[in-house]
Length: 413
Image (cartoon, rainbow, N blue to C red):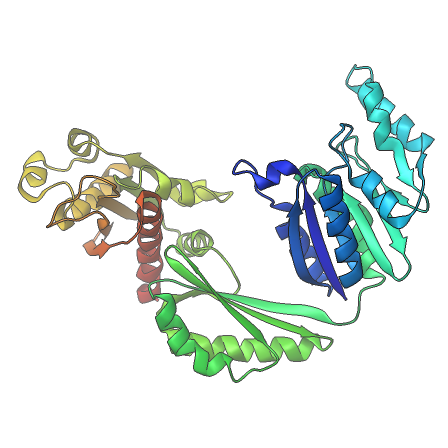
């Protein structure tokens, strides 16, 4: 069974809004054994929307249209769908009463324009909206399904889970998507593929996708099959063989983020961590605290941009900064050791560098970063030269810093 997703709204064709709903729906459809073969974005234009819906209904067994169910003149999805299918729009009094009641609960009078949201194409099944006024619609068209969902993610997600999943599951084939996601850091994409390709190309039933992101490479292994036990066995074998080829650069074989891996290691060893960061501007601390329960292992962090703050707050000797420069291996070590001592943490991370676009020199160009990890026995430091713009350099620096913590525990085992 295949599906197409149409995201509707002129705002999605501007730089100011991004369609994230289709990502969520793709994952949910894949879990049901439904392959998404096409996605598109259409503005609030009647002719363009009709063309997109008509083409999708020709190609796909399931079509999901997102957005355009509001009460305003540019919300055209209901009308265009009814017109395309040759069905009348009829007012559903139960839906209208529900919308009116929602407004009453908030102490407001329902504007007359909202009555448009109670219009349902003949034969359509109303999908209740517990978070807003726009109900969804389930429309059967011969042997195909057209689903209309509201655009706001906080409305779409519960509606899909509560009202669409069970209906699609009843029609979905026995064939399912079984997948594994490997994450690798410290190796460029070309090296990863050179080592992994001789392995994954032997598995012709498995679709392998390589995705590059700042500081990491992802290997997605996808197996569509009705025999899930066999698929799990095959993917397990692939993961083991690729892990052997890539070595310790593989930090996750089940899709966990580097933050999750670090959290597990710190908790498992009853260890704590504190950070003193300069060029990353708090991004490292943000990543470490992005998970619930991070207070169990993260002691705190200091963003010490200026040299005097490095000295006053992290106890980096001013003469060391004067002699070696703020961006140096020695200052990175002093930051790591200073924050570890002042926070009484097991480990201290120090990061200093030049994120750009200015501030570089021939000796220390933009992208130069020094990272140190300290424990009671001393500190280890690494220097890096990261490519890219300011945001990319900062992100790669945090990835390298977290990876130093991961490798610390890897070698400690």
